[in-house]
Image 1 (cartoon, rainbow over the protein chains, first blue to last red):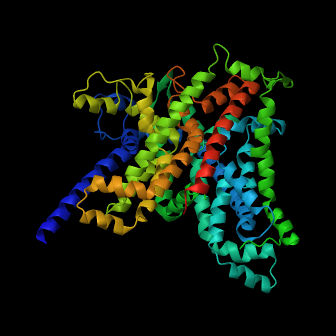
Image 2: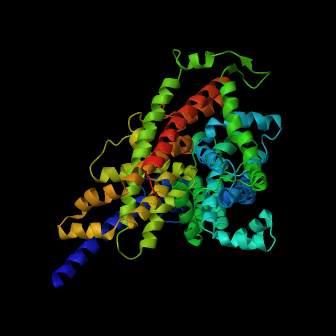
Image 3: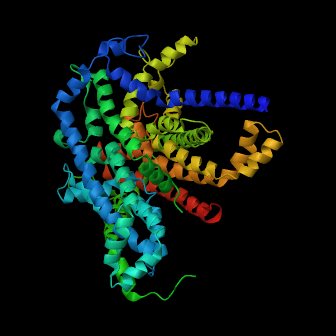
Length: 283
Length: 297
């Protein structure tokens, strides 16, 4: 008995050691962002590097936030997030509703097409999209980045459908007996119960648009319309030396961009993890 | 079980609910795919109107001095490395997350959080960490006696090991880690208990029980990761290397971007897009097969 307990303790110690070493490895880049954001450019260029800044400074943050563009980039990212969340919550839930709750001709075929379009890489459709938006005069505005959100993203339709399937059909039937039509069943019965999936899709869209790079890079030109990702890429060179990175400012900006997804993970862990898991298991 | 007597009124209202998706399909996915095919037979630099040139763009892909074959090769290498590394890393991380110890929430935070970081900031910090002169990676290597350490991001050979490491810190890895982690919880306990009775060690358990039990999910994840890697290649590579050194990491997605939006050669870029689409469609077809035949949830 004593022997086996000693064995369990030994196993535990080995397990903790592995877990901790891997955790340090995985979190190191983010630790490095935080640590270097408190160093001056000369401090960062010091070799050997300091793991924790010996003389931590907040100047980088002051400079990044004083740069009026940073707040504009942040505002633009928030506009894209809000616009896309509103668009996708409304349109994706409406599209998912018949796929999960109604029996109609062509349902399986349409669902198969939706699954197939989930796999189409954006870059294969971006050229004609660019041409359409150019014809409409929408280039260099938020429209090409927000309007498509109102036409049901396949990924989110899938998440809504999976959730709707778990709600008992008897609820729809009793609402129908009470005289509700399909639309009223959706609004009065399903939407209130489906609150968790609305949160999940909202959180996933927020993270998606916080990180999105390709489409704003192509559709946005003006400095005052750039979101954070594009703004961060084009800013923070050392003045007078266009090829040299202002590492210190980049790291402060990176901290600003790292914190919101972390907070979302911490406050909405359950929703985020479930959503990400479900969207991988297309079946 | 299926009710084949569809009510036409229901069918009509169902298609009403589906209409936003139909419009989206026509404007943003299906329509553009067809338009890409049409554009790929034209020569157009956005000025004037497209000129029909038949198969010339496709001939140009294989002409001397074309960057297409390099791009195709690079895409192939990238996909294998990116998918291979993220599948293996996510499986190992998931195994660790299934240890029966305390503080699992903290460990899951550390393992998962890189997945939801913007690729732009990961590119920033990897460029700093891997810098030849001031990078912390070369400093740590010097501590264990490696003095002549490489210029990771600017060396045509070392760029690939670099991309392999960076692939561990991607959304794909985090997502598969979560999926594997749930799958591992579903492996029947009796199988492990039988193993313990036979005196199997940790690695034997992993090889003989864990892997076979979750093999359909490994297969499935691999195919999904392959399709995803065509999408994520741009956001990983563009901020990190922009296709460099030289054109060593210029994957197809980057090449399409460059030809369409830097060189404004819309016809040629469309031909590239059509080829990429065909590759993805072929892989997706395999996936459909797999999910029908061997994967059950």
